Image 1 (cartoon, rainbow, N blue to C red):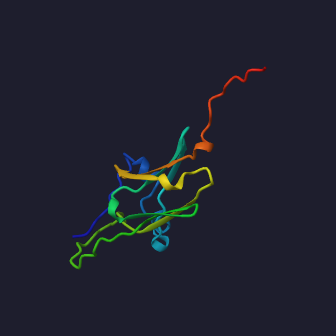
Image 2 (image 1 turned 90 degrees about the horizontal axis):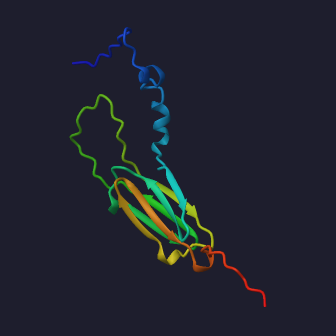
Image 3 (image 1 turned 30 degrees about the vertical axis):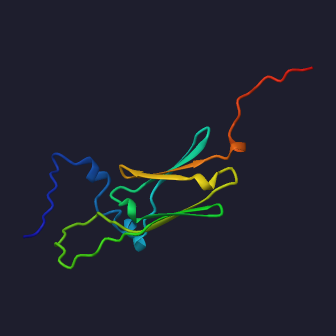
Length: 142
């Protein structure tokens, strides 16, 4: 049995016309490197780093703090099965990655918290007391 693609010209598929499925195939697999996207949010008392890593297992993450360098790495420890099915197309990739963030002196590196939920790794980086913004106050003149 072979896979045959049929394109009905009466009803074109807009996504396929603008984004052919094989156009980005070579870009996706360059060196099998994957770098997850990150959001960095500043709140009044802390920062939050969010890394998107759907389908990952939290026990495969490793988070290290060395001086002011935060390193987040993921090692795919899944065993390769010898009896793999014959894929027509395979786009699911579970690969290892490493992200590093250089932190400034305002971060309390001893109290960093991490959680993994719904495919997002969130790290809370509390600010040191001297870095927190203080409410404006009126200074009385004597």
